[in-house]
Amino acid sequence: MKKLFAIVIITGGLMGCRRNVLDIPPQDRISENAVWTDPNLVAAYENNLYNGVPHGFYLHMYSKYADEAINTAPCCGANIFAQNTYNPDNITQANSGDFWGGYMYYWTQGYQFIREANLFLEKMAATGSISFANKQQLTGEVHFLRAFMYFNLIERYGGVPLVDKSYTLGDSADFKRSTFDECVAFIKKDLDQAKSLLPQRYNATDPNFGRATQDACLALWSRVTLYAASPLFNTNNDMAKWQAASDAADSLLNRGYSLYSDYRTLFNQPSGSPENEYIFSRQFSTATGTQYPMHNLGRRYGAYGGWWASNGPSQNLVDDYDMATTGEPPFKWTGGGPGAMAAATQQANPASGYDPQHPYWNRDPRFMATVLCDSGVYHGDTCFQWIASDGNSWGFDSYKQSSDNPEGGYILKKFMPDNGPLNWSTFYTTPGRTSALPKYT
Image 1 (cartoon, rainbow, N blue to C red):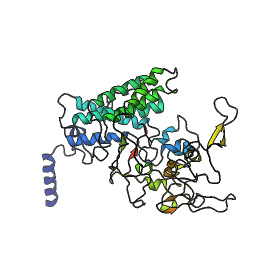
Image 2: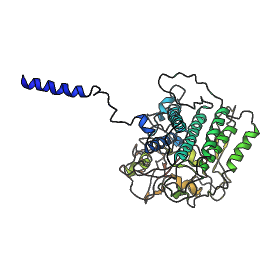
Image 3: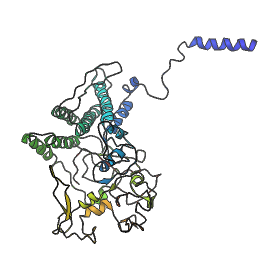
Image 4: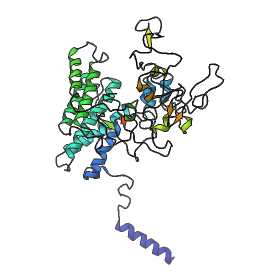
């Protein structure tokens, strides 16, 4: 009894000293109040907003949602595109962001990041807010990022509700859909604000390269105005909108950019490599890199390019490459079009010099830099995607050999590294091209 009594007295004494012993801050997260009082935490919060900008190295690239890649993915949002069954009710399957869906369905992520951007801008503008050296730069970047997020919304949905403040649980609001032109005006206001706070550009070797700049603002505005002028949104063919698009593109022509000397190398060199072509791109480090080669190559390299149905180029894409000597397309299409009773038909273009016995010869050089075809060479290996006409024999790199080989008969070569190892333990840092800025190549 003495021992029991002693324990009760000691415990009671401890409880008496700390009446709120269970009222302690969470140990696995940082409180919101702490974020806005520490410049390092503010910078970390702002850095995370860049994740609201889609890039090209998700498991499912956007090419498979169009006709540029063969899409046989059995799950994860891509399956509804492969089956041509997507609709307003099931499109939400393609919303899983960084790994699976690549933000094809952007609504949820878009407004999540917009709320975080709004909160950041409110905290930075608040009376008595924290002061630090690069506050204006980060504020400008967030205006750019919010503009980019809204562009990703309007290119998918047209006019959307414009939300320029943060809301908390318990708040009520009546959100109404804005017109497309109202959204364009909102984006322009954000970009104008961003330009006033940002440097013109960073060199590709600068650690800051990949952050928002004045030139990135100009490039995004060029793309926004092009969409605004297009027949989809400019139903009256307002020529003033076409002039605005022309002026926006012209504003970039004398900003000092130039084409890289080698198309193949440009797209497979690591982040931080010297070049003068990219205006804005997603940079990676070995800590934040991707495994995109292993999601796109085939069985030969232990990759899952077929099993993931990952972006194997389609015959449609291959047929689009012109002939190098004549500059003519190898094929022409006849018929089809609005109101046609039958689909368009493809015919060889006799003026092109295309040889059906050697379909990959004498094509635009970008073809071999982009597509790994039968008898193509990669990493010193000759790849064999052929399938005999009777279907009873095939090459090692054919989908008949392994479900890890893309079903369309072609493998994506663009972006795939020419040097270094190819394995699942390596994280690759090739820059990710954003989906909304103009591309010279």
